[in-house]
Image (cartoon, rainbow, N blue to C red):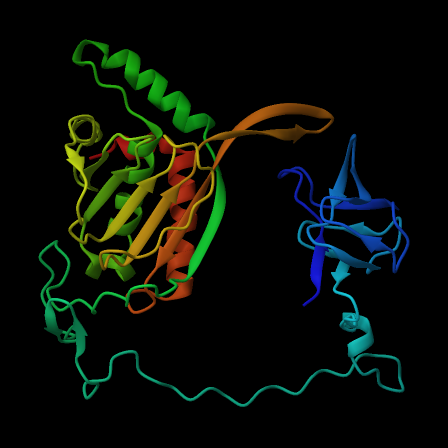
Length: 339
């Protein structure tokens, strides 16, 4: 399968860049880690490397304008044919314009809840689908879908969040709470943002309001787990996390679980749905990247937030908007102090 040589993102200040030069000709042999072309954006130039061994095929000409995610070239295995470019695969009408592709047949409507569907089973017995009139008491419904089978791959998405304001808030509150020896952390901010984002969405009210914060420990230390709710004062949530007991066994399922990989220094992770929770949000270790403000390059602290979700609980568009709302709350965290 062809491996794309994509255009990397150089920060939010890079809407477009220019492919300045190919280092290897079209059809040349290339090895993993070899620099294949130079990308230029304002005063910044970077070399892009191949990720696999094979034969290099150009897709963009030198001097072409490109953006993050564009495919500049392909690395093909020996004897593998390159797929046709988009412009080569579209039929062109005699008038010169591209003929629109025929629309696919409409997808028949299928209700998400089928009353006659067979019951879902789990290790704990048989569970029934949630009836439309089930009351909401603030906790997950007792008629929750059965946990996903072991080894099942949950849909995942991730984004990068800026941490300047969150770090500033933690430093300020640490000074204000110094007498009580409380020091909020990035985990507290993200867990609070997840609980608030779920609580304020009517499409997610069926999940409940309790969020587990699982902090992965480094080395042989025990992991710790705490519970956060949207209506809980932020100071109480920080105190609960500070006094959290070690956790070595299975966790009770909540509306969501926030897993921190900061202590072991893992900057990107995608945990599965281990205990039947609808949503898992992973916090990667903070890292420093270059930000561009005109011609000025400044350091910026960011982290990766990953979200895994059970599609039986929420659709992909709801999950995407949930992750985007969590990012907005972390980047402007003062609203998290309400409650």
